[in-house]
Amino acid sequence: MWRVLWPAARALAVWFPYSLVSRSPLPKGAFVAVINHFSLLDPPVAAVALRRPVRFIALDEIWGVNPLLDLVLNASDTIPIPRSGPSVRPALKSALEHLESGHPLAIFPEGRRVKAWGDAPLHPGAAWMAIQARVPVVPVAIWGSGKALSMDSMRIRRAAIRVMVGEAIHSPSYMDCQDPVGTLNEAIRQVLDRQIGRLEASFSPEYWEDKGGH
Image: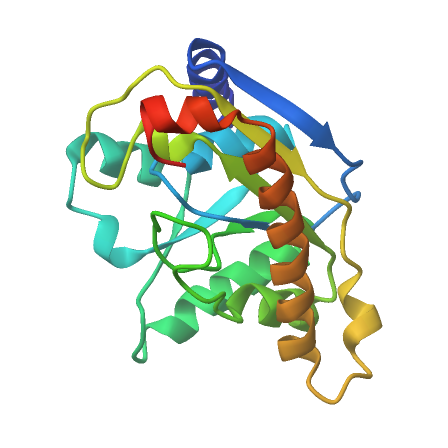
């Protein structure tokens, strides 16, 4: 199914237009990609930037919102996860098995779309999975997607989107910390914060005054 979705994602990226500001080499094998979340466009945008088949984790509550979205979620084998409750455990088990089989996983650690970076704290799930599976974390910062498809509308606008794929963070090096998951999660936050700051600065103030959004 990746062969079907990949050309569609590439075509979408070209239309916006999309630019990859920087891309560090990806680790071989499994890794956890952590991505900030402004828009429903973020999964295909991140997939194009990573250039690798990745399996996403998404809140189960987004299923049933839109038939087309359901089709994409199911076709891409996205792992549904609830916010809480006993059903969380099977979802985490599926995610860890995917990593342990040598394949990359993608997570939006804010847990929801936000209008501005910093509106929601990073949940520790991505850091926990990276520590458990002993795989690297790849930070991916996106800017402009919230203007192309905002939280308040399903209307897609042709807007510039910029992406940075950061250097992989070696999660096993955090194993000796007093709080490995918390320390790694903070390291992820700091890297994404720097990346998003660079992307934000790459747009002129006039651009945001005219268009609005992130």
